[in-house]
Figure 1 (tube, rainbow, N blue to C red):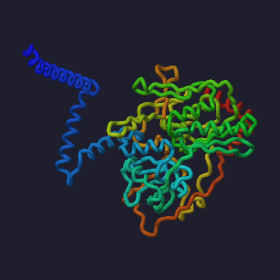
Figure 2: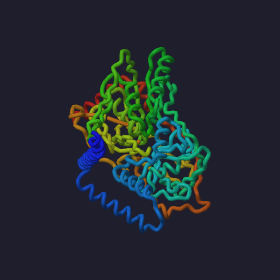
Figure 3: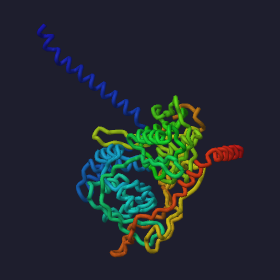
Figure 4: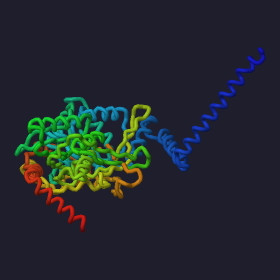
Length: 476
């Protein structure tokens, strides 16, 4: 008996070792199944490069810095919207979706290696300083932005309230570069504003889709109903320069104005990326006249709303062609509190339209007046004929993939701008004393809003004309 007890420990240890080897073999098999066979050769090349850089680079460099740079480059090579989020940037993103963060209040993208303004956010330092869509940010403080990643640019522009930052701007039609000095602020985005406009019509402006946007929209509509004795006369939903935001908020806002039916669906490689989003059938539903305003700055979630209301024939879309971002980004957290923002699917409108690199075409195409010399307030300025940026202008964007319809196998939808000549950054350094002064733009007439009110005033006759135009287009 004592001999058996004495021998039991080595037998148990041997069994554990065998079990460990079996588990390791299973893990290796799973990894082999997950990666293509040629991946191991490429990873070996990567490891060799890493070792060479660490051994021979002019200064010591940490493995973490090199790996972070490699991941950033890998994601950036896929498409304009996939990115590696460091722990700091991931925290910023979480804060931003709640509508409060420290910075300038500016939506940016990369075009031809140059940081370019998509749109300033209302009531923020960037907006008050007069920055415009299409402005190119040549320098942040004293650092050129050419080939700077979006991640790095965002990091540099974020900061505590009151801290100063200088942007060097190139604007098409303006001869000289000019500097804009700003003070960072806590950007608290009030995503929904509402008011009664001319002729007693209701107006709701959504600047971005963030947490609780749907609650604010619902409250605004309820308030209008109380003011108008239980019935809204007509409503203008303004989505101009709305860069998007949270998918679930786009779905809920669409649901507020629809009485059943498909809102959006997504198509991806994996089964969990095949999803449909529907509006709820209401016991009481008010089908009041409705116009949606859009422009080249309306992207992603705002295009989902406009597309759903257009396909369901719930609203008339007025303005100019939208941005054209029809891809779905999923946030995938990693163990070190960083994350990947990865494009995982395309989304489609209820009629099966992909708006990727195309956008939503308005029912009524009307633009607001171009800036005048007086509104630019810069000596030697010329009017820019096309200041916006669209998805199709971004390097590496997905091509449009039109879907055959919503009855295809596993159809599904989800959750972010114009051509500008890029100056050579190194040759465009402004000389001291030559920076042009920039003032906030003067307010121009809002022809798009005026057209929306005109449509509401002649709603029945306009619906007849729109139906006629649609029938003629289908027959061609």
